[in-house]
Image 1 (spheres, each protein chain N blue to C red):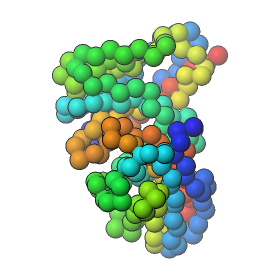
Image 2 (image 1 turned 120 degrees about the horizontal axis):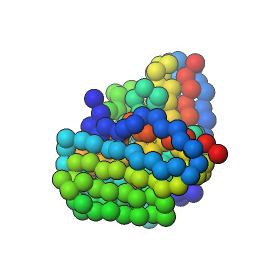
Image 3 (image 1 turned 120 degrees about the vertical axis):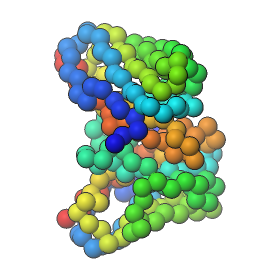
Length: 110
Length: 111
């Protein structure tokens, strides 16, 4: 069982549409990270959220940390083919260990 | 480019063999982490070193070991390899904020 549950597992949308990826847990995290990974590459850090209720924007990407710091969401507005990739959330579970969700594979069709 | 360098990029070896994966962290980073990514297990934390000392241990098999050298580079040694060890192995590094930056990985194929 994953400590962090991501949904949906797969998402395929048309260019220009919006999408939301969710990351949920029963545990409280001091911080939560979102990464994007392309095939054959390492995960690339997108954002870190720290404060409950925090909202961070990165161009067309909006990240939200739940008030209770147990969940997070990633919303992409007007998705582009370059947004295609595996989106991973990760939370620190103490002792410097990051626990990753299984990821959401996003495909944006041109 | 994250600044974390891993070698080799690809490795093919036979069952029962031993391999060493190498990682150079970003300049100034003291922490090095090793992760394994397979299709069925996702990204799994293996072990972390901080300034040469083991800091945290995850789901690392006894057949696997790692170390961090005085120049801060790290090596992950995998021995008695099995088919199930085939995976992507990632090294990541961080300074003090604990958010790791990942290298491009080593793809290990055990045949």
